[in-house]
Length: 456
Image (cartoon, rainbow, N blue to C red; front, side):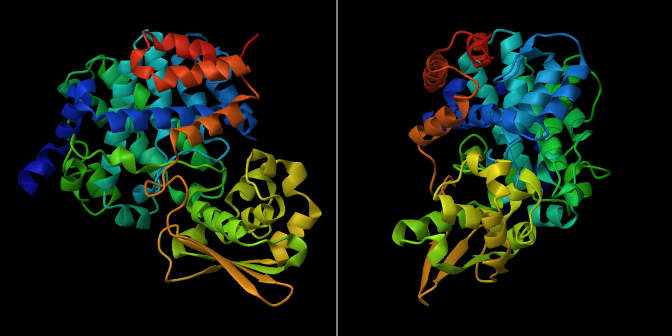
């Protein structure tokens, strides 16, 4: 396929893939990874009820419509649109969902909620859901890969709100039984809602980009279902196409190279710990340091954290963090609390912990975060200078949960158990784990969503 042909057809190629790929054409390792992505998203959503802004998004979601056909993960019911929006926010609310590192984009908040909502409403099977999750995640990550991310980022764009509507539309459209032409129209409608910039960085609006991306894709699919006229060439249209307007023309050939043979969704990483995705390397380095050396706060004179430029620019400026959201972004606080507590869970991001005067002072005065040009991506180095004058180090090249060091199913299940116990009984937790592990055997997704709703 020539570059010219690729540029003319890339939207339609992706649409055909999303509309026609069958369960049997997806490798078993890929469907198993989709189960990990789903289970991780459910764990994050259950934890998301502890988010500071969750009640605000819940109020917005409740006002979108008055119907009650769709389940909230760990909650009650809302409309199809309301549940998509709120579940999307829940997954990202406490900053521990997935990350596609090549595009610094979270994928599951946009793809999982509309897929669950449509599958529940229409009583579709677990196998149907697996296919929708696979094509939704694959379309979203590949559109990101094709945009030439550095050029996209240089213009200030934020991936979740731009790529998210496409992944959401692909998942929803697949469950609605779209043919390739209708799916291409859904992508045109999704692209017309693609938005979000890094002007929102440092505020909860970046999380709103994600749940709004989920809702935008759902609306795109529902409108395309009505045969609404839309461009079928949105990605590469010369005047206003995504790749030309949001980047420098992109690399459209990369979006479809090896499509169906190499699954880009397997490059989606998961987070074992809450905190920003770009400092997961630093967190891994800190735990590596503590595993090798016996350190305590009173015997540590200085912690020196070295980050690559991107991680430093995003997270090196929160030595004096304010509130939970900034604590979740702060490399200073994460390093300090890991040293003090030797763990990192949502318990470390409660006000009583992050406002502890000793931790506040240690993070501001004894943690030094600096940029190291020899470090790339999320690589990190943690050095501790002890009161005796010795220096010990811990390093991370690939953070825990990355494709290079992935979480096992047992680790994802452990994360689910940890954060589900505040919303679900032990028996329901184990039932969810059993259903997800054998999702392809589930007759109706309604059963899963019934178990995930809060008990009354």
